[in-house]
Image (cartoon, rainbow, N blue to C red; front, side, top):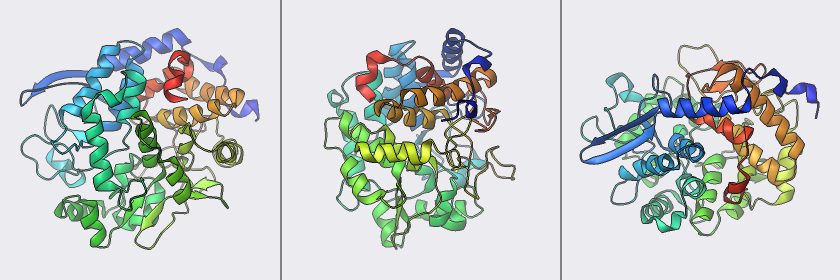
Length: 410
């Protein structure tokens, strides 16, 4: 690796202690508490000015960082997700504790109606059990976490192989990633037809089996199933990693490639989610080394100064500055801190210590200069998107690895 290709820690505006204090301060300023319908809640708003509600995977990442500062808030954050849980175990991807979804956003949000206690009828990457293990304790001791896993297995494991299927791009958390346009076309997130997809799926109750019966499409997606496998393992259940390898590993390309049904469509666009299985402790070593050496450390693809970009740098759809169209489209090139952290875990587990440190340096330097932004230009580290973005506090995990908790996630 060329040391000059990554930002150096000598560029820091803030030192490690100051960076840790910044993370704590942003998390604290984003904290929200209250009660709705007799149900108490306490959670970290992803960005108070732009994202006031509770997002499922944002809260999981925030809880992981909160354990460094106020461990009680980790538990309160995750219990607030469970506070919205329905009797059948379902937990939606956005929970509207403080106020309902606004009318202008209704066409884009996966809700059944605007009245009453609301959460979306769709999911996000299911990492609750894994986050609980890292930040709180044994998730198997909390029956509500098992109930959510049971719901996912019953409603989204459509082929009985242990892998989950999603009904919309935003269920992956990767919203407008260009790889989804190969599956949903003009109805993908960030495209003009997305409200039509939401309306169609709302009419079908966001039921994956009904959607499949009506012609889909549905997607077996790499990141979703990576975090699902981590949560299954945290619960002490059989790992989904062997099935993930069997179904999505492309030996010829050396990447994990999603599969869409009907038609067994395999999106060709290379994005960072093809590398996400690096976070799996039971990923076969040979596969992990191919992901790192052929792709993550490849300057034509993912080895940018602030790595990894959300889309490979040699893809035609790569937009490192976040794009400038009339519709905000996420995950089309900039680097996000959660993705950097997940691949960093795999690099460390596989023994790429120097390379992992260099990757961390680039992200740490960007956050130290620009603050906790939603995402960063992978070439310059310029902060982009929302300010005071909570899960970017994961930079604290990169700056000061918690070796005592390593057994929870390495």
